[in-house]
Length: 91
Ligand SMILES: [Zn+2]
Image (cartoon, rainbow, N blue to C red; front, side):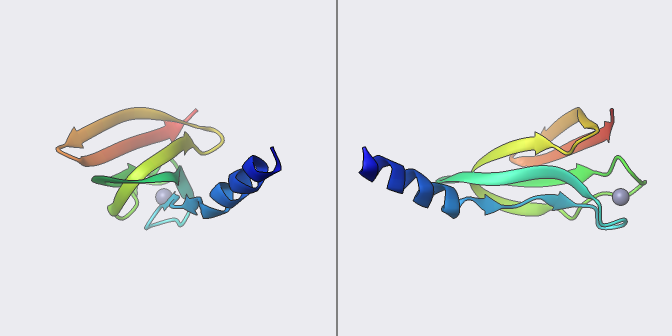
């Protein structure tokens, strides 16, 4: 039992924060946290709900937990192969 607990703590500390920030207004647009290594390669760009801008396109690899920033919702996700564009808008 104790051993399992120790491993869970170690796993959580390995989580890698890859949040997307607006290149124009520097606000956090979309939350991405790597939860597991995998061979899945993709890229993500998020359209900013706070200004007319967007984030840089970011290359990622692995499995990610995704979540919206407080006060925002995902309006649309489009994919060109493994290149995803997430359009976020204010709730
Ligand atoms: Zn912005």
